[in-house]
Image (cartoon, rainbow, N blue to C red):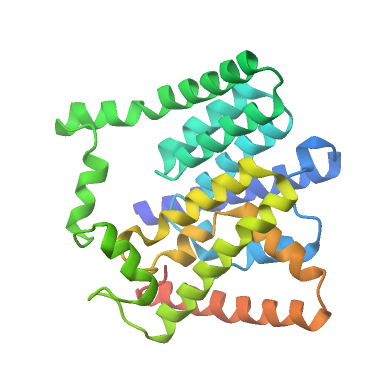
Length: 279
């Protein structure tokens, strides 16, 4: 069986598991449901995000979505051991999983009283997640002789980067950038995700807002915004918050948002099928 077919089947099953678990949390209510959206539009923004096809293709986004949701779910329940373990597994899935571990540690700090107790919980969360994540650098060292081969290999498809390239991305100042419609769309999506940090802060508090801010901050590290749709697809705190906030506006704003999402979702899925750039 071709690997893409197996990956697609696994990814779809993992996304279904996320949906079933989230539905169960919603039915039970309580602290475990606090990270869920309050409106139907909140769900639709996640389901119809431009690159949501990644949840049904041979990508790692479904696994990351499920693991990050579980990590924050157990944080909301103040169950620090499973939260740290899922955060560590999340870091094994994608590099951005490190931010899940950071946010989980901050959540433990915020929910615990007393400096000594807070420090102990924060350290426990960090060490547990770090030990799980360290399995991958250890494997890379055994296989490649370089524990950070997964990072250094990126120079094969990314331009040489420095601080100025990161900043130039915001005014399309890098030579590999362009200002076609796709680039503009992704740039607007990036700004929307960046603005959602304030919504997440108001809805969920500063640990999840810190996670969102860190996640968004690394997006321009390639000196452009071409991956915004794909990487933003798993940022469920932002997508839920944007949907909930829009639902409180006049109805035509909600319909406009849904129309834009449907257009972009169809366009990205079509590009993926035609083997064009769809991230």
